[in-house]
Length: 378
Image 1 (cartoon, rainbow, N blue to C red):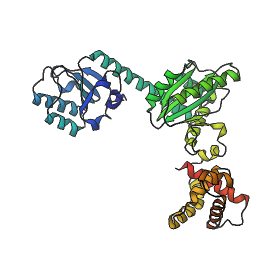
Image 2: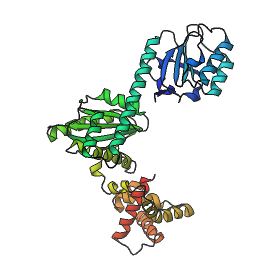
Image 3: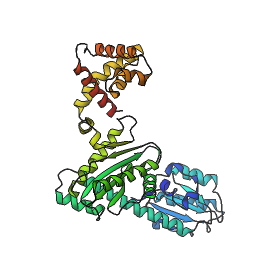
């Protein structure tokens, strides 16, 4: 597919470019990069072409520049980078057309070599294709109905050096793009060749394999990885699957890492969540898309929310904190900076709203489950 113009503008060389028109088109994909200095036949332009030029042949000729950009737009090219050797800007007419056509045009200092731009963009395009292939391989692993042999063959396409013991981690960062996370992780630690760090969806999937290492050695390696993840900074979530004894179970550890990462949203302020520690969330995540689960939650949460709206109370917040503190009245009061009697009153009021005044253990069991489901949908 290539990379977008916006992504290219972050590469070394093009990161010095000034976008002068067509900002709304930076999502266009670059499939090929080339140089254009003399007027070319429009038949030579193809979709996704990104051109570099000094506009030597068209300097001082606004009409010719406009005609050239119109031809590029018509051919569905991705953008134009002008080296400021002969001009440092374009006319308002040309820029207005580029804006309306959502065609990115940028100016770059002439001390940036053409070769640097071409090499860096093409390298990024090749890497992007590798990322797409790896993502497709991961999706293949996650698909149902695969034999052990098919799973191992697909895994080896991702990394021929994978060893038998296997686990996975999935990382997402609210303030960093996956590409930036990948760079930071790779620069932060030394990863063995039997590990793979891949862009996947909006995050980074790390597949870690081990041979005959001791448990202590594996734990140390995992600790190094967790420290590397922490050093990326920002608000992140990291889900980690179980360690499985065979490469044929790579699909299981990837699923576990993805589920643990997704569950981290519902588990408060935890940055790192291990699949083995999910408890009831292991089942709830699997049922997340089932309508019965949401219906169960609504039967308990909706009446409390409706009461809060009607009487401007904070009963739902209290119930959530009550569950987060394992039903401990004193800890809930401390967490909400309220008196314990206030918490008791509010919990009793919730019992009345839900007609559960006479339930004991069953009351906490039901609201605990409803609160956990509620967090999944937030």
